[in-house]
Length: 252
Ligand SMILES: [Zn+2]
Image (cartoon, rainbow, N blue to C red):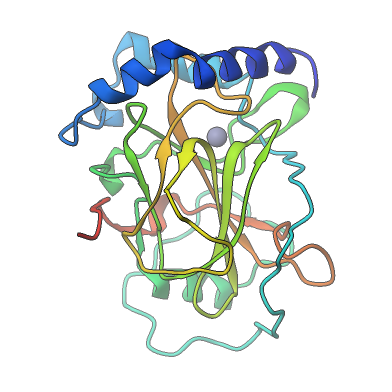
């Protein structure tokens, strides 16, 4: 797990704090285009290979300073929109059909400005270094692109970890799900733990912090059930690949 990781982290930090980063961020315009997976270039393919050595599961975030209020979340969901997709691959232990209905009912937004659901690559089951499995979706986008709340809910934790870099944990309104955003270049100014957010609110900016390769800015986005009987931010993961409904579009 550690092999090949320290180097990535050092590279990430150098980019994050280097003067070159500041210049590059300013060069990213609001109209920056988001690469589509169906148009993957050889450079993008190389970037994906680079990611294999980083950006994986086994995330060990710091203990939360403020946790959402635990509640029972076993109830079925009413008014589930038609067309719930099947989940690709195996379900994590503890994830039920009712949970999938509930996640589909959230009608998630791709949490990066300009990114479309059809552009996402299913790298949820991708292998990572140290025998880890990704358990998340990487949304490739230029550094500095706004990262958006995928759902309404509450910010549960804001922090910085060696692997995730600048990270955010948020919940849906019922606190049934936890959304994890990692490798942010920076958090949105003024973002606070406990703050309510709406789908499409800017909560940060795409970057390469943590163990993300310095030349592959992306958002690492993970959906989990809220942990039961253990840390709220460390429940079983769900592949959200086919559960995005809206393209990333920031609230004004
Ligand atoms: Zn990732």
